[in-house]
Length: 321
Image 1 (tube, one colour):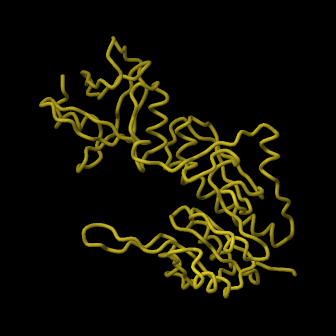
Image 2 (spheres, rainbow, N blue to C red):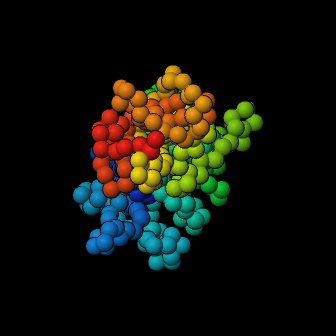
């Protein structure tokens, strides 16, 4: 059967802003989106206000059919999804789909993943690429199968990671590039030009598979016994969200938790200071000792306070001497 972008019936799965850009391109490009699946609304704050996902907000604004299943194996949801008669499903930044869902459409289900698979399989590929000091990353479209992020690759595209790029900058670059590639992938499927490549072939050719597990609070704590570059990469890989954090003790001996959003390398002598010791210099810098040198903490935020420069922070905070 031959398809056009108007006749190909697409169901789109996604939740965050990263997914919205691709959905927007599909809608504005005239592709036939017959349904959108996103996460159920979440309660937030003391008032238990329900937060809607960015994908839901976009779907409502554009009159798209919306499904928000609590459980993806729920028979009622499966039947409602089947009733949409999708030819193709697209998944971007969503949870793992059961086979009864991803195997439903005749043309399959493809995922947009924010890494150069098989590198960085998992929930946080952008973060881990920056944390690990990678100089390039990219996006991949691939057909889903049983094991997460292991399906046959349809397309890939690369970008460089700048030395000063944080995860927010890389995220936005990949979001735009990924949306381009989603359109290219759909068009290739429509035109019958898809020749998927098994990830095992890339592994055999020397590309090492690696994990990108979910980020937890303990992941974000700065270990000052790491090198300067490792600490800086951790901060870059978690900024602006969820943010690296550390503890800072004031002159009265009270320890405060602070999120760290930006640091820079210095040639300041460590002078025997132990890893983790913090001090300020005459120029108003907030300095911290690492295993092999000293970094400057440039942007930070105490719990309950706003983000500020180190100079502003030091005007109202006396460090323990």
